[in-house]
Amino acid sequence: RRPCAGPPCRRRPSGAMLLRRREVLQGVLATTTAAAAPPPPVAAPSSPASLTMPLRFDRRGGSYVVQWQMEEEGASKGYSGILDTASPFLTVSGLCGELDPDWGCLDTRFDDAIRRERRAFEPTYEVYGLQDDGVTDWQRGEVVLPGEGGSAVRLSDVVYGASEGVASTRGGTAPAPMFGLVRDVAEGIRPSFLSQTDFSSFTVDFANSLLRLSGGEAPGAAGAATIPLVDLRPLGAPAFEYACRIRSLVVNGYDVTGWMDRPTYCVFDTGTTGMLVSRRLWEKTLFRTGVQQCALELPTADGRGTIVEASTRSCRKDCLLVGTPIDVQWRPPASEIGPEGPPSYDVIFLGLAFLSSRQFMAVDLDKSLLSLGPYRDLDLNPPTAV
Image (cartoon, rainbow, N blue to C red):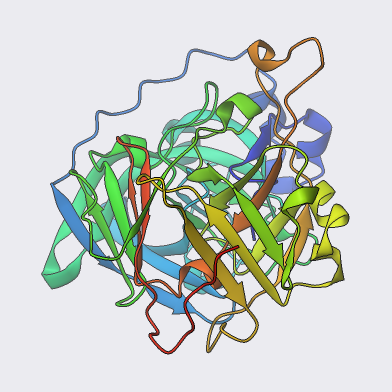
């Protein structure tokens, strides 16, 4: 799974598109084509200094899964979603029976009175590249994040997406809800989950299958590589992806840096199993022949740079190095379109094949820094310079 690319390539659904969805969606047309009203205010964030949540690895989809609860009519109901560091949203299935029941689903239907009362924003039609989320109904609710040792965080009036018509596209894995960890979004995008909390950093602890959310700085560690992040919203990305520019690139043992004739960025994406490559770069380089090995040289805060690498030889156990071309459909703001047209670029989304071999990945949202821990398996040969 992965966006088209990055965060959602969103558009307001047309009446015809919505009416094709199911009889249950017959009331959508009047709701979504009405004149836009000022969006309701998002509740002020309130959360403790830190919380450590357990992660579960789902071998069917090759992803880490987060569990949470939501309060509905005085009762608590469990939900889960894929840990996704390239999406901003918290989503659930809005139609029971559409997805695997293990993910959880809303008991109410789209046109129920209680859904209309809880609707925070007009519904949209969301597409995430390898997953089509269909009609997304933006609801408000009380979310409870369970932590270790019986701890928990209770969040009121959280805006989340309830999706109907969810399907995988272009060979993606089975569709699933998302626990998105991108905080800052572009103007006009629905509220991100993290923006409704006080958390300002997070750590995905791959070694211990834990997610640590914190209101302070992301903890450092000896041997970690700290990478300054680049905001891709001027290129049209709907959110501040956790991204940096690629210095050099090796595919299947061959240096293809010379073929990168325009700025090329990588996005750190736990919602992807292998890697997604913008189609132009895919077709110009050795990616199209199949990916057995890939190494990227990335800038670091100390100026020395670091290598992020994966190969079919080092990718073990639950790791799967699969490369897929995607069409990046970002639309830059008018201010970024000059006489020569919109900015040109290529993007690679690095998934768990590159990330889970590290002890951890930590992001400091306020400082725009990402840290990759040392390799977990000391028997692996250290990455060679590109």
